[in-house]
Amino acid sequence: MSTVFYTSDLHIGHRLVAEERAERAGVIFPAVYRTPEETAEAITAWHDATLAKNWDKVVSPEDVVVVCGDISAGSGGACRKALAWIKARPGRKRLITGNHDPVHGMHRDAFKHFAAFAEVFESVEAFARIRVEGNAVLVSHFPYDGDHSEVDRHTQYRLRDEGIPVVHGHTHSTEKMSVSRAGTRQVHVGVDAWDLSPVPLPDVVALAVQQ
Image (tube, rainbow, N blue to C red; front, side, top):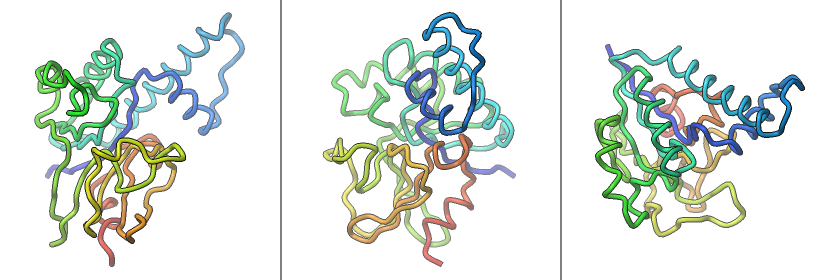
């Protein structure tokens, strides 16, 4: 029997994000690297390897992993490396596009990147609607409101809050759930909130559906 997992904001190969996550995890790198660049490379390698180890530990080939955006920093080379990294992971993958993904419709040439993403993901969508325990839940890279900056960005690409719980990434928060200004539940599945690991659907449901 397969399991569905959710995750977001992998940021494979993204130096700044890797450094932030290493610092938060309290990982100390020995002072054997000769330059700051060598240290940054070591931290990024630790970051990507840790994400791979955590994914491979819980996901089986028959499972489904819904990635809610931002697989890399977004540049061409970074994106290709991230796609290769994801392709090497077990499970069937589906993508909800994020602002750092060149295939997101906010980018003028998004269509040029679709074929490369379609080789890795069995679906590529801007958002999705699922049903859990008889309740509608939306899935998006973005929450209805909230960001990791003081001002909400990309508001024109966010779903309108009509009271349906939303599963999201984007914020890089360590909090697993928040409530929108309208009082709607927002479940954050980004790896920053889940020990750098994918989240099984039952854990998402427990937060998204009011018990």
